[in-house]
Length: 414
Image 1 (tube, helix red, strand yellow):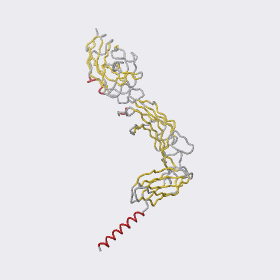
Image 2 (tube, rainbow, N blue to C red):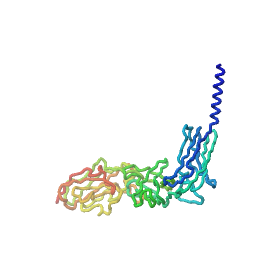
Image 3 (tube, helix red, strand yellow):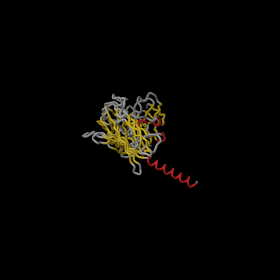
Image 4 (tube, helix red, strand yellow):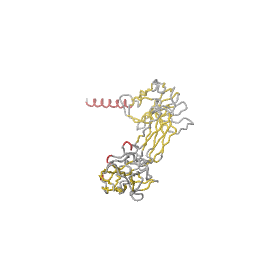
């Protein structure tokens, strides 16, 4: 009896293995409806592909036109055995391709099939080499085949220094979009694959619509963020239309001297002498500027050691306000303008280095700044407070650098 039971068990196991071996790798394959019109009108835009996979395999879904050209929808995607059928929507869009004789300045990554009759092929291939293909017919009609073309793509300047020095601080990216799209994006891609989004400028052309578009990038520095590190980046402009077609175009951009500037008057201290003087005497100060950032700080004159008359300002000495430069300023209670007396934050060739035609205080360095004001007219009152400041012109005077170390000064007539 035990021998008979054992034989039965072995026979049942053998029958089970035989039955498993006969189970098709791929079955119940359907694509419905058999006619689609991929034009985003909401009617028959997509077809549903379903199939049963009985063992783990790599699935490919392709389409072949009447001339034998193949178009890839899914390329060798690994899938495991599943109790329920797999299902995927096909919107008529396949991997990008060029039509015969077509030449475009952008790359097509996704493109809709042109109108016509196609043979769909779904192939399952296992690791041990078993392969099964099932086929059927699909008709595409009234497809929206106009691509979301991008032309006139430009990046300027090609070398970009986001450090708020007023020189090549921003990059402008222009393009022309040839149709309304679902999404238009521009970004920088570094060598590690990290994206840095570039915002679009608000102009007459609404977002994602046909027309001329401009994108403006400052490295995020105006929002208080640290810009991306120095190096060469690839700039991408990508467009995706409502059908699902995608194109992109690229250019390169190099970042140099990138960094968020941070500088202070050392210890918030200034020496100011004398604190009692008469008309025609000279009031002089000394302080130290510290660059605590990893970028260069641009500056301009008048240079340390320069002397103003009290009825002058920096314009009178030939140094107008310049966007992005750092200067030390001296101000007082009854001044008619903010910090009328200003000096560069170092001496050219001594504390400062030259980059192009401009002078810069190097990263993580200090410089001593001195200057004087000759009092040539009597102020509205005898006692006045004088204070120093570190000005980032047309950017900000940080709170920590404003009204630094006030000194009470008495000015008398002779």
